[in-house]
Amino acid sequence: MPAPQPAGSPAGRTIVTYDSIVKPFPDTQTLLGTARQAAGQVIADPAKADARVTQLAGALDDLKTSQGSNSRVMNTPRNAVAAQLQTHLALKAQQENKLESFLLKGLDFVLESFDIKFSSEDWLGYMLSFFTWITDLEPAACPPASPAAEPIPNNYRIAVIGDWGTGLYGAPYCAASIQADTAGWDLVLHLGDVYYSGLETEILDRFEKYWPSPPGAIGRSLNGNHEMYTGGHGYFETMLPYLKQPSSYFALQNDNWTLVMLDSAYNQPFGGQEGDLFQAQVDWLDGIIRAAGNRKLVLFSHHQPFSLLDPNQGPKLAAWLQKYLDARRIFAWYWGHEHRCVLYDQHPGWGLFGRCVGHGGFPENRVDLSNAPFTDQLGSQWRHIDGKDAIPGGYVLDTPNLYIPTFETKFSPHGFMRLEFSGDQLTEFVRAPDNSNIYLQPLAQAK
Image (cartoon, rainbow, N blue to C red):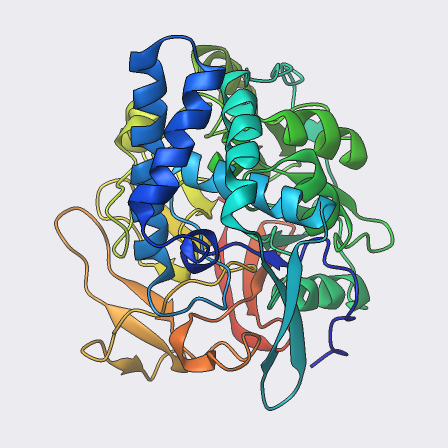
């Protein structure tokens, strides 16, 4: 395990939980009453002000559910207002030095994080600025992609890491391992999500501060729903210039493979959890696939086309890509969004190999998979779960998360993938945060 994260600066290590928000108040109705007073001063229409407070109440309910019993570990629901509120309160607490340090102690290291600590008298001012901010949000511009795939060498190495933008837990250790890997990389690809809502300061503190830049490799990041909770401005106006990345969607191609990176988040600017595309992107994709000829097609996106452990089955993505799915044109698809590592069996209808690689750094509650057997084929860290309806079965990485001290057994493990395109061969590696191999398998040869 690499050296512990440095203590000191709270930037990027501030945790905003349901408990930390409500603790200054005798009850949530008092909190919401002050919020309604603030909304009435910012929003002229009483009905719209009431609607904003109703959204806030729903966000708090979702925060309470997502927190569960783990009030010392980062959590955020798939709720735009909840994520915006967490971003806003973390920023205000940092600006006003209203933070309280706490330590999580594990067997191998100690993690220092910061809890917000404000009084009920602060709340009116916080809500005035919060409602002003979210009312004025507009989506950032999405620049078009190059019409042609960028040529890459026939031997090409990619680090794939998803939902990594926490700056905490396994995230910086994954980055350090990618940076130090002597086998080398050509591309480091993030599948999206910087927490809580992709604000510029969060891009700086939770992404750029830890982002690996190994020699000879370029960095790229896809767009996630959390980035779009604040209109994507941090992503498009801060992250993409930092990476020297022209667009949120693009393609790479060599003699055997066409690799397509999709933006599945832009078409849902301030909410929505289901992946979606938009017409200009699909028109671009049609041109890329026509030019690909008989090369194998591999897709990368933030959102999933299907899942065994998440209720979202990606029907919008499937609808946009139906002709390619039905024709079995897509060879493999890598995605994040769901904060786990799952290697799916080949899809029975579409023929593709699906891979969920969303376990880069966000703490995901470990579900009870005790009824699913460990597998002799992949080893004791993997459980196989059966398929359901049209969704194929798959192998789920299921071990304690050693990078969340004190709560190791409660969260799914972190890590990343290494993809090696060597001529017509694609080989997959699943790596732990310390860069040890958990899985290594040639997936297929391009025909």
